[in-house]
Amino acid sequence: QARVQRKLQGLRDLEQARPMDRLLVGDVGYGKTEIAVRAAFKAVQGGKQVAVLVPTTVLAQQHGVTFAERLADYPVRLEVLSRFRSAKEQEVVVEKLARGEVDLLIGTHALLSGTVKFKNLAVAVIDEQHRFGVHQRAHLRSKSTEAQSSPHILVMTATPIPRTMSLTVFGDLDISTIKGLPPGRKPVITK
Figure 1: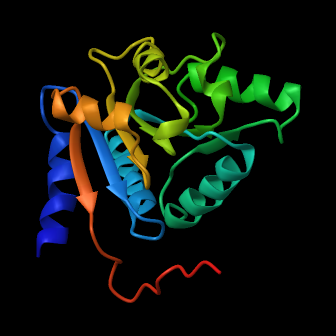
Figure 2: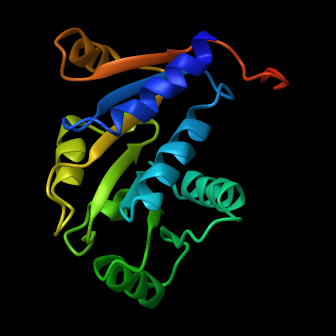
């Protein structure tokens, strides 16, 4: 019951007048990415764009596969921007993004470059939050050319660092925690 309430709170955040600025903490395999997929889907259903910022090319590819599988039954135009794409492919993605022809863009630090502009960015997800700073979060807020307000920001981590935790204490970030595995999920065992 509490798990469902937390998920509903996250979706309610997207409906508020004030842009969401939420830290989502949960161990590996607890469902942080699933919450990001649902937030992205809600934004895309509303005709808006979504950015997912990740620290590594491998994670960008993994998220690209996960998001594509989860959203395969819906008309979501998804692209991945990373060094696995040629310079020409990246240029085409950036042009399509600016015209609003990409709904969901997953990428590495390339998302923060000056050439990347969203037509109407509504939700920005930052995964592995400890690898990015407050500056990058603020920079994502300025990426939309037509948005009426700042995008909602969802930062996710399994290992919050003291700097991030202080932001929650001072009210700059709301915090949600996922304390258990989703039903039927097997725990991750590291040897």
